[in-house]
Each structure stands twice: as C-alpha cells, then as structure tokens.
Length: 329
Image (cartoon, rainbow, N blue to C red; front, side, top):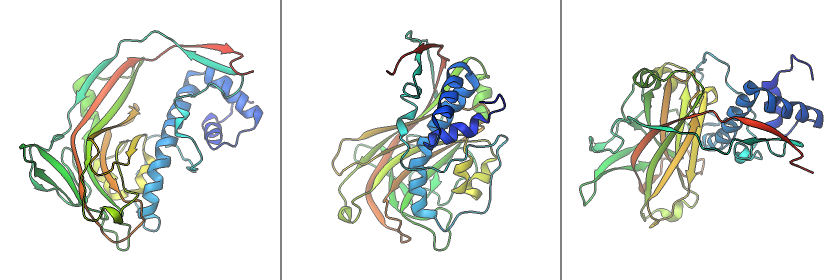
C-alpha cells in the first residue's frame, strides 16, 4: 500500500464491507501504528452506526422532500452509503478480528472528570402549555412539532408529545414523527470550562426519561419508537434548521439511542453519547417519538412523555495501546 493511500476512503470501504484481504491488512496495520488513522476509524465507525439508524427514520419522512440548503462545515464530513447490514457494534469490538493483528487497551482505569452541562429548562419546570412550533434558530429554548408541558398530580411538570407533524412545514412532506429540539452553544461552553485540545478524550452524553401510558389509538401504532439524539455541527445555528434534515449528513458527530416502550412500562432513562470533536461549535438535542409508518398525515400520540433531559461531559485521558499478535488462529 502506498504512503499516499487515502485512509479515509479505505475506512469507508471497510465499513461498507468491500475491502480486499490486502487492503484490510494495510488498514489494520495503520490502525495499530498510526494514531490519526486509529481516531479516524473510531469516529467513522461511531458515526456510521448512529447515522444508519437515524437515516432509516428520516427516509420515511423526507425521501422526496429534501431541503436544498446545505451547510458546509470547515472540514469535510464523512460520506457513507449507509447500508443497513453494517453492525452498530463496530466501535465496541473495534479492531480485534480485522485480521491476525489486534490491540489491547490499557487495563488501568484513568481518572475521569464529569461535568453536567446546562440544558435550558431540561426538567420543563420553567414552562407550561404548548411549546413553540418549528425548528429552533437560537440557543436555549425548546421547539419543534406539536408538544406541551403539563403538570402532573404531584406537581411535576413533564413534556407530552401530542401529534406527529412535519417540522419544516414542507407541502407533501412526511409526518410520521414528533420531534422536539434545542440548540446548545458548545463554543461558549468550551470558554466557560476552559476546554482545550489536549491528550484528553471528551465524550458528551445526552440522557432523558421516557414514559408511555395507554392511549385509545395504541393499536394503530404498533411500531412506534422513542429516541434521543445528539448531533454536533460546525455551523451557524440558523443554518441548521434551514438545511434540516439534509444537514444531518454534515454532522461532525452523532449519538443516537432508540427504545420501544410499551404502555405501562416503567419509566426508562435513554442515553445517547458521542465524542466531542474539536471543530464542533453547536450541539443539537433531539427528543423524538416516531411511528415508523412513513405517513404524510399527522397522527395523535396521546401517551408519550419525556422529562429530566441532561447533558454530561466526560473527560478522560486517551488510553494507550500495545500491539499483540496471534489473537485469531
């Protein structure tokens, strides 16, 4: 393999399951010996798995109604074909099994620093009634498809998803999901926390508590799912909404977690995480209920609730690796 090999393209090819034995061997060697290629693979595998799920849902809503506005980040985003056959567990079992060369992460646990980042009205205690309709263009407020903050019998306030819709209001566009969004200024947080590029690996974790109650139309929505998604962008806040949902392919990082709750289940805490890339200046929180139907007709939801939205930053030293051989016979 030549020194000028385009490792980014080869990583994409490998994630698509199209590398030859020689190409896989060359990539395996670079992953072990080259930190830059190793980090590229980590990022690509994580983004590949998360976007596969995200794109499936978006295709149902927007296959024929993509926005023409494109956000161009300062660095070229990963461009994948998103095959559904790619396993999302690539990041977990990353390099063991590529070929006969593997890596073992250091067994000692480094000291981590955990910071809870501000999410405006993350517990919904500072609002009541309907949330604004439409995609947010400024930081620090909830808006999206039809939803409302209600007060429960014990006084707690919680967000209820009301109806699926098309957040962009595109004529003939899909209406199979109810999404609520908030934009967060990552650049401001970097300054506040004096967060600089270093030997530390920084991960963002988004968590939210979902609950489903029985509703009259439950039988009409047998495949319904709930999810929380964390998108990272290098862009201006107002351009994200203009380019939605096509802008997702320009994300510099995505974490996504989906569950399928049933009426009467215990409240479930859902957590999505992704690496904080140096170029990211905006985080987009997305709380979603998706019918997975591809319908263009709004549908009432009734029994879906979310509360206690939190964003956490975890800093820990990058783990050293050592090369071992003969992991596979």
